[in-house]
Image (cartoon, rainbow, N blue to C red):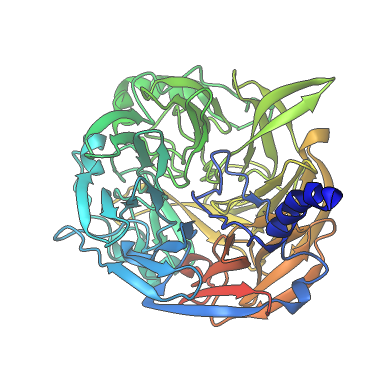
Length: 579
C-alpha cells in the first residue's frame, strides 16, 4: 500500500496527459510567423496517412474572381479576404459564416490592379484590411463592424487622377497593331492588394498600382506618358488608425550611381551617357517613379526591422523618361519599423526595363556557416535565382542555383520584338515560398513563361514597350538547400505556371496547387505527389494548416487567376483526416 500511494500521483498525471486533447494551433499571420517561413510544426497529417485526407467542409463566398488570399485562423475563427476587398469570418471547424464585411469603394474609383486581395491581419480583437481603393480598415473581429477607416492614398501625396487610366487599347496602340483588339483589364493607379502586417502596436501596409502599366488579357504595355503616384509603405496606430510614418519608394537622388551591371555582375545593357544627358529634363521623374508593393513584409522583432520587395519603376519597361538607377525600385528594402527609416537596400535590377519586380515575400532564417550563425534573408527573384543577404548589413552572400530557364537575359526591346526568359512574370512572382529550418530547405514556386518585348509608338506618337507571353506557359517547384549555398535538391516540372504559393509541415509534406484545378500534397523530400483533389477552379492561393479540437485541417482558396488564364471561382476548400 505504501508503494501504491507513492505511485498513484504520478500514474494519475500520466493518464491525464494521455487524455488531454491536443492544443489548438492557429495560423495567426499571413506568413504563419514573423519570419514568413510558412512551415508549420503540425504533423498529425503526415506522409503515412495523407492519402486518407478527405474534405471537411467547403465554403462558397458568392464572390467569384481571382482569389489569392491566405486565410488567418485565431481562436477557432477563420478570417478571409475575398476579391474586391470583402471579408468573411468563419467557424474554423465547421465553415459556418459568422459575419461578413461588404466593402464599398470610393465613388468613381477604378481599380488599377484587378480585384484580388491577398488577405487580412488579425490582432488585439481587430481585423485589418488593405482595400483595393487604398484604404486601411480596422474591423471588430467579433462582429465585423468598422472601427476605423484610413485613406492610405493620402500618404502617397498623390496629384494624379487615379480614375483616369486607359480604358481602350485605341488610346495606347495604333489601329493596325495586333494588340488593338484586346480589352484593357488594369492600369496605372493606386490601391492595396497585400495583407497588412501587425508589428507591435503598428499596422503596416503598402500601396500598389505605381508602374503597373496597361494590362490586357495577354499583354502588358508601358508608355512614357503613364503617370501614377510612387508607392509608399506606411504605418498606422493599431487602436486609432493615426498615421505614424511613411516610406516613399522613390525620392530625390533616385538616379543613383548609374551602374552598368547588377550587384551580382550581370550586364544591364544601358546607354548611360544618354541617360546622364537626359537627367536635367527629367529631374522630377521620381515623383511618379513606381515601385509598387505587392507582398506582406517579413519582420525581425528583435531588431524591429521589416523586409520587403519593391516593384519596377514607372513607366514600366519604357525607360527614356526616367534616366538613372531609379532607386529604390526593383529592390529588397529593410526599414526600421519604429520610424520608417531606411536601414539598407539591395537593388536587384538598376534601371529596370523588363518588369523584374521584387514581388515575393522574403524569408528570414539563420544561416549556419563555419561554426557560427548569421541572421539572413532569402529573396526569391523574378530573375530565376534566390538571393541570400546578411540581414544586418544587406550584403549579398550568395545566389542559389537557378530554378527556371534563362535565355536572352536582359536583352533590350526592339521594334520586331525579342523573346526573353524569364519574362515579365518571372521567375518567382508574388507567390510565397516555404522554408523548413530543420532541413534547411526552401521550396520556390517558379514561372517559365518566355516573354516577347516589343517597342512601338501610340497614335499620338508616344513611345511604348509591349510584352506578350509566348506560347510556352509552364511552371516549376524547386527545393533549394539554403544551408549549402542554395544548391538544388530536386525540381518538379508543372504544365502550368506555379502561381499561388506553398505550405510546408513537420509531417514531411508540401501542399500547393499543381495546375489543372488540382490541389496536392507532395513528399517534401522528392516533390512526388502523395495525394490530390480536383477542384472547381484554379488552385492559385497559398494553403494554410491549423488545429482545432484535436483535429488538423488544411485550407486553401480556390478561385484561379485571370491574369494567367486560370479559371476563377469562389470556393474555400478545407480538408482533414477521417475520424
